[in-house]
Length: 332
Image 1 (tube, one colour):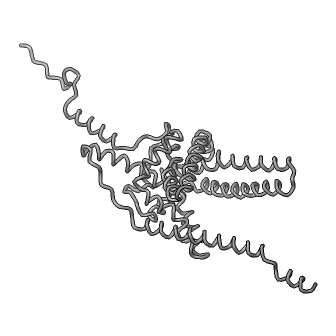
Image 2: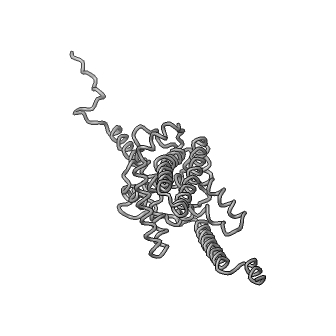
Image 3: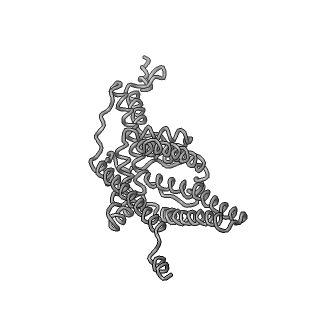
């Protein structure tokens, strides 16, 4: 009597079992919730620095900013010091060029000074600023960097970063000429374009478009973040020192905010798909953002008023004879 062969556990027709199908569906859903991949060859984004929950409070980003700066502090210190030196040298070269052109009237010396100015500007555009963006963004992603690798990546991004900054500056200046407020809005919209270019390896125009898409619903929070380096400048000496310290501590805060906005946008898109088209609810901006914006506006207005007053005093002194001149005239 022939014995029956036991049934194979392999499904007929090559079909997967229901359990396997369910697991595959779960895996696909999990993949769709994850943020988009970075540049090929980069390690995955770590969650050690960027907080899991979105932080609207501008002061709440100081701690993750410090953690990011501490991760690659030698390179970051080199970038800050190098940037300051290049800035001072650039200003000196510009002033020297103008002085030579006005007082010396030497065409050769003027051209040499102009070439030195352009060389310093090119150094800042091609190396310093792209390097700062790369270090800040990768530090916010908990990545340990090497200076040589970071410098090599600068050549890959510098032209797109320069073009994005140039176009954003044109839009900002155009808005400032109109009614000031549109210029502030445009500048804030496009402020994250450089991080988009480095993170997603996009073009300059796509970086500007993507930056506006991320920032437009969080304009108050971005203005509050950028106002940390300005909001206490109306207080003489002490306020300015505190503002400088806050600005240095918050160097990596825009990169952290970019990563959070990127994750928030992905989560919002998933929520829209799941809820069949209904818009996800968004928490209001933290009240400290409004406080920082108001105080920063007061600081700017105060600084502008004091600057105009100082210029008027200089004009009055230049237009009126000095006391020594009056004394000499009376002697005659």
